[in-house]
Picture (tube, rainbow, N blue to C red):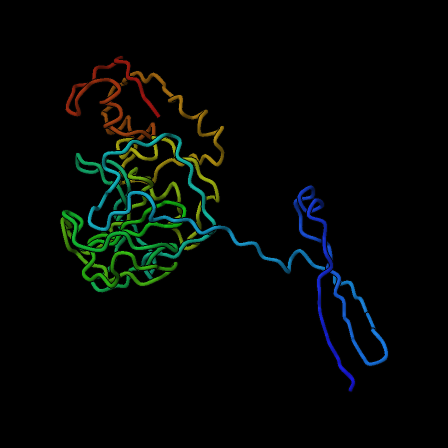
Length: 310
């Protein structure tokens, strides 16, 4: 009786070669053996391997490993950050948090004597609110001041907050995808009208959202690698009523070079006010007062020298 035995075997590759080259083989050799009553037939074939046929997946980042608290709005409250902060993005675009044209009604910066640590986007109560990037819901509950709030931690460590919602549609520890539904916009908490309060933060440091993202119709992320200096985490350097003068740092070297604060001397002229000086020199009244140790209602004198810090 004729017996057929088919066996595929990969010829042995030297372990020493793999260790030295630290690379995958260019090809594997398959051996086809056929056993009959009269003969042993052996056929061999070389099969080339294309590098594109092999996919190496990165080890998933465990974003829940540190400071994962589903009951605290800011679990990093007692930590300190080292500047500049490096944030990496895999995406080049983000999903708009609202499904209609974005209208910013208040920006990140100093507002009515208080820091405004995010941006306000206009909406009508009941409008859908979605996640801007993939991540995991860390916080989904009522928060003092922010009302019904959802915080999503993304895989690069960035957290985004969606506040003043009228309805929350997710729970803590839910995996959420870019554009995933989070809830309905509203007017809960300390709010004077329906809007979405959106913040971006990294390990407890609130970052000017417009430093990271373009809030126009393109929905683009400004760069794959962004280095954040203190200026972009301090509302006192910015005004909530106007677009910030943006200088984006894409390298560590550029960020470190900027850490030395730029200063100039301004001589007060006739008709000058703190508001006028801050507006013309792209700084804030708070910054002028802090650096020069004066109050907002201080009287300016013609010829007085003020230090302006940028």
